[in-house]
Length: 269
Image (cartoon, rainbow, N blue to C red; front, top):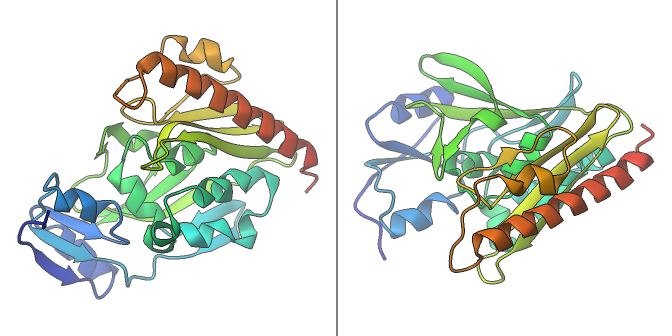
């Protein structure tokens, strides 16, 4: 299908972007691989499309004890960033390598995926497990928010009108930590039928799951995945019944934990 008629504006700078996004029913366009397909299906019909792809919101940097990721950073950039070549952050690159195909990884962006809030998206589980926070900005000012609080349901977020993700901050885990991401994908779409991210180390173990409910979520600290997921509300569809998805999530969580523990044992930095 062809998208409905729409106004298009290319933001000259961040202030210009925030001014445009303050208009009624405006949407930000970054890589376009999440938004454009739903516009073609007319599931999303914004009146104004604000192109933010030229803004200086890209990059991967380690500073002040945290990993700083620009929201316009592409999946491809995450797959090979030297800053992620450490056991504690391995899940980020590992996850990025499995997202979509080459075209999607070259154009799709971290911030765009988070704002889209697809319940089968992979990276949210990784960022939740790592305790990441978002830097948000609107014409009214700036604020921060844990990634775990961003998602309210399928394609629904806590972003306010006119608000833009301007940064993702991941606190560096303690030495002796490791992380991992494991998923089972639908062979045609590549979206996760179930996925799990794990962080293991001196501070304990954290697991987040995705693809099995309306939004990604954390499991209770140090809980056995089977026990933690036994009472979780899991949805089923024609691709995977609910109980099958639940068991996939348990398997993914256990494998992610095993891989994270192995990497933690090698983290001597």
